[in-house]
Image (cartoon, rainbow, N blue to C red; front, top):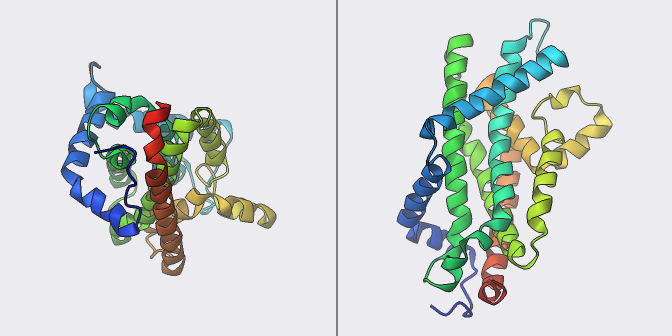
Length: 276
């Protein structure tokens, strides 16, 4: 395959390439996940303890040090805060993990660009697959905590995959774009960490959006993670149906972002070999 040839850029091509290479994506996702813990004594067990440890630390800091409460009644305590906080952490970690990794996906896999025939467009999908794996482990931690401290989760929790899907789609689009830009402009990899840290505090991860003054709510709602974090809490914690209209609009925007990111990646990939 000539790397300088034009690649298909249609939305259908985006879907087809993911489906056609699904076995490769699965295989490399497993390798990515296992590779993160290779050589460590506890291995994959760290994927369970890491989110649990961060949950305990954040809960201690915000409830004991800053005396934060979620504003769900006078009886709201540390248990309520921890359960609600963890959902925000799980959702935002998908965003932060992929955005931070995206600029280096092509640069760190030069052999795939120069030496072998490889569908480069699946690299962001593989990174997303690894993030989803860790998301599922974190959800397992949350579920165990909820069962022990609260009880059986609401049936609306089954809607969580529907809520998170458009978020995943939009992040994939941003990852394709950043993976391409990262080849030509290496400074992007240095700025994404700053961006994701800033956006974490500009999203309702550690606080309720209802506690904000009205003039600041509009700013927080611009954050692409805000709506999905709120909807995830609605179905997992509050036991209510999501905002279907808002989710539909979000899904449409995410689909457009995904296609534009894929289009940009395919249009610019023929220059990767020359730069690298």
